[in-house]
Amino acid sequence: MRWAGVFTILSAAVSVFLACEPPALTPNGVVGVFGDVGLGPGSFSYPRAIAAEPNGSVFVIDKNGRIQRFDENGLFETFWRMPQTEQGKPVGLSIHPDGRIFVADTHYHRVTIFDRSGTLLDSFGREGTGDGEFLLPTDVAFDASGVIYVSEYQGNDRITKWSPDLQFIEAIGDGEIDGSRLRRPAAIEIDAEGTLWIADACNHRIVRLSLDGELLTTFGHFGTGPGELRYPYDLSISPDQTIMVCEYEGNRLQWFSKDGRSLRRWGRGGRRPGELFAPWGATYGPKGRVYIVDSLNSRIQIVRP
Image (tube, rainbow, N blue to C red; front, side, top):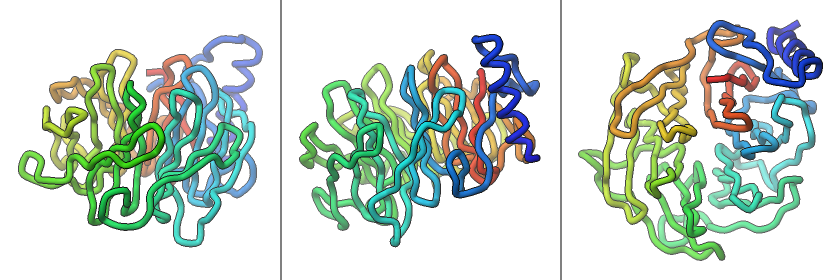
């Protein structure tokens, strides 16, 4: 039996009998693992994006074009498929404050919107480099006024802003930023102060902009030491407003202060629980847990930070 299966069973059993947070399964705080390789319910074909309701379910996209919904402990609830997948599969999804699921439908150059059960509600964007157009969108974020932000790469490498009724407003971050243009902005998030954080993956750095596109700070460069990054593919704002960064090639999570100081690191390369192999994403979810897309291990790890 795969390690993932063993620890899923253990975690679920402890949760049922104790009805509280289970004890850690590894020295570095893993409290659950779910998923394995496959195409059936609860299995994954290269998972690569995740989003979590604050007090509800966890949603995962894999390279089979499926969105699966799980409860907070990793028990399968339902799934649906993207409307089209022949050109490629999505790499990002986000949950709107009203509960809608926004999917960066990457290879169809649009954002597709569903309800939490998979009913298709709407979409916006089309292929191109102009206003209202996308090249390979990667992620979606929302500000307090309802404005929608979408990151994209391979030519555009920018952030576009859209009104709550899905009309194009403007592009930001599309020029030189601290000596270099964005190169594959893989993930975005807006913090409680109303500023935009960007995982600038191929520049191995994090960029912070105002919502009007003014540069506030950058930090990080290629490497494996504290404060260095290897392909940051995702980021999430911690409950204490520090910045959690998921390093795809670094096989770890790293937390930063807002001024760029490395605070701590979690994980290393490997196959066992508590180790990572090409993690594509990570997010905070119910009970302050961290849910990690352990992509090439075809599983999700749940960590109590």
